[in-house]
Length: 117
Length: 112
Image 1 (cartoon, each protein chain N blue to C red):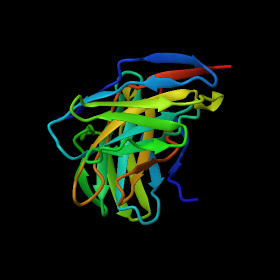
Image 2: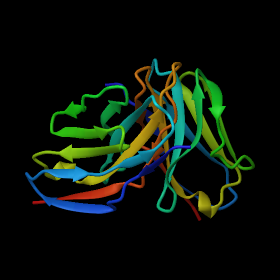
Image 3: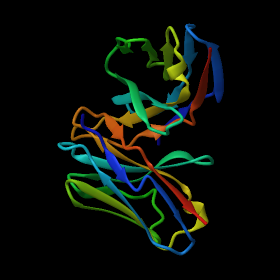
């Protein structure tokens, strides 16, 4: 079974600063995907970024980037130039790779991020 | 703009009543997931379907919960009878062939 650990229940940062959210996971799988989801107060789960384990290059989506360390089983999210709209719960999630399609997500417990004006 | 829809968005019911939640996945996605979110347990999988066939419902209390996918455009989750401990937000997610999952807005269920 896979486990995902987010050790920072809450974080806060000043607007325009950079913040890094931590995530570690445990698995015996070699091929898998990792995701970060954002859940603002509206409760909508929004996919922020994904990383394929076989790719060495870290994924980037605009102000969001990850630091994927496969050997250390670490997958942190960096938010640059933080904005008030980034205030949300952030969930790290793991998915096994299957040849024939989507698999279930295993989520961490989340980090509540507050951007201070 | 393709998105997952869920109805109802909010449901308040009394203990013992039947609750039915509905989900319309994104057209062309072949996998549908039901997740539940609570303060105590976080986000957990209840059940999922691929090409309308149930694959895993081990996260679901079998005696009161049932999940079905009568056609490619509709997935349902039923609770009968409902109990106060079922109060939670229930999410449906639609899985693309690129191994991404897109979530609906959720159904907030309160069982009194």
